[in-house]
Length: 129
Image (cartoon, rainbow, N blue to C red; front, side, top):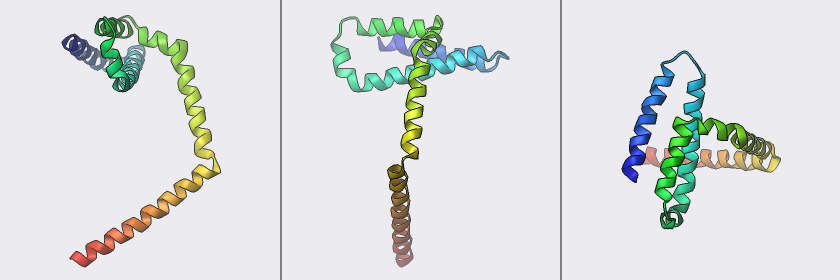
């Protein structure tokens, strides 16, 4: 249920706070990985919510998943098994896209348009004053 999920998240938030206060970086890395994975789950759930609601035992499975990725270090296991490679692939693709001449040209045109819009806005404000 939603209340169980919120209870787990509040507890994990407190555990995250406690990990920040420790000297070890391993617990910090685990909780950062957990929150990154939880954000991804929420993103997917946002788009598939209507379908997910129809699945039997969906909320129970979600609670088990949250318990595993948080309390049993499942987030770290998943990240090392497949998450790291997926994120690195996306990062490389993003860099290639950002370096593409057409993308750079589009960015430059956007900046020029923004400059024109700001000039028009400043002129309109000057007429009102």
